[in-house]
Length: 372
Ligand SMILES: Nc1ncnc2c1ncn2[C@@H]1O[C@H](COP(=O)(O)OP(=O)(O)OP(=O)(O)O)[C@@H](O)[C@H]1O
Ligand SMILES: [Mg+2]
Image (cartoon, rainbow, N blue to C red; front, top):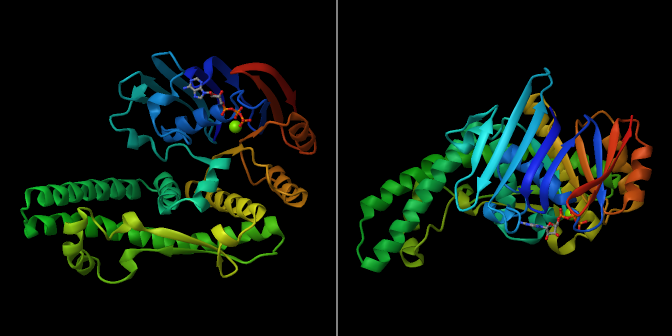
């Protein structure tokens, strides 16, 4: 699957832009703030109907304007062409269309196209709390399995109802245990499905991840990813029941898969505290490359790969490994940004793959250089 054309109106720093892409690698270069990351974000929007950077959709409308639109034309491996449209009027709901037909529910779009992004903000997967790591798992599993997304939506619905009830019961000093038990039902029914899937997935994911990490680091360091969940500690129903008293006081649900985490380790130690910057970056890159591989296995098509500032912080050897991997036949269409055009030019010259260098300047195309 590849994206052969994109059109933007009032999206972030782009007033109006129309660009054609090749099936291979696009090197997107330009000064800081020229719009390189924003262009990748527009592609991310087409696939996942949200920004990879700013979760508040409205803030992605160009300052002072009252809407944005993103239109993308894709070609699948059977040459079938599909058009995705994402539009957002100011103060209103997002509109998402596939081949001119609007979706009833945006979640129906998830999984139809695939993208993997490697970006500087991935650092938050290591540095920040468990929410980021859950988001990584969910983002991946939702793109793979519609059922997972449905279960997650249901779980979150029960969770917010349960939390709202706990708050209300506390404020009104009234307590209906049976009602709470009915919310527990949703939490453990859908929570169990998600738990089973996350657990099995992490086990399948681990060896693929390790292979990528070892390739990048030339097998220097041992690494591991471990799934951690409240629901590992016993029967789901009992755990929820045991938490009733505590939840009443806290006014929120204190056990469940909304607290799951992934522990990242280098050797036996937490990556966050003991990994060097380059090791952390290699870890993140390997995580995303493993994501790519799993998605391709499941769907039989190659996701679009968005590489934002990927060469930063990696040493020459690791960059070399990455380039070897990128120039092999492993990947499909790639978008690669770099604020240093000479570096990208030099790297792409070595690659025996069709590529194009697009130079941006303040939200406009400055030049396009085609290399076959
Ligand atoms: N809603 C918006 N309206 C107008 N401009 C915006 C909006 N959101 C972001 N921008 C602008 O987009 C620019 C940043 O673009 P982007 O992050 O794509 O740059 P970049 O080329 O990736 O730069 P770098 O090399 O520093 O990563 C900034 O100047 C920012 O002010
Ligand atoms: Mg950028």
